[in-house]
Image (cartoon, rainbow, N blue to C red; front, top):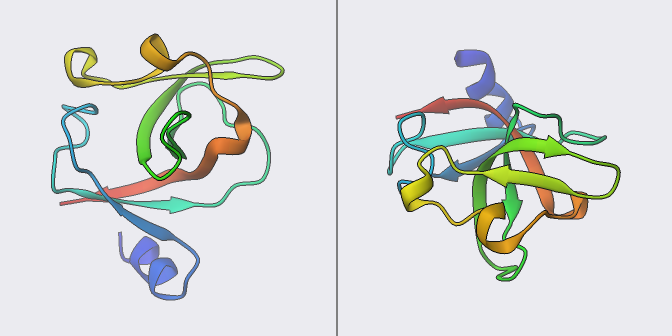
Length: 105
């Protein structure tokens, strides 16, 4: 909504563009999300932008599916088109950049 866009304009949110089909049907290629930097641990059921664990220059958007004391399991909603914990394993909490707060087309 307008509040999220205002927070982005004020530098309180970061904007990311969805590039592939890994989060279909929720996030379509070309759509954008706004994230908030959150202190603390990601929670199951949240969607986050994070650095890919083996390609640090690549940012990915994934659903948090399981949280343990040291590692977090993430998944794409479209398993046929997603590279996620099924291929690279659980990820460190240090890779998480921001929690998705809103999306827009």
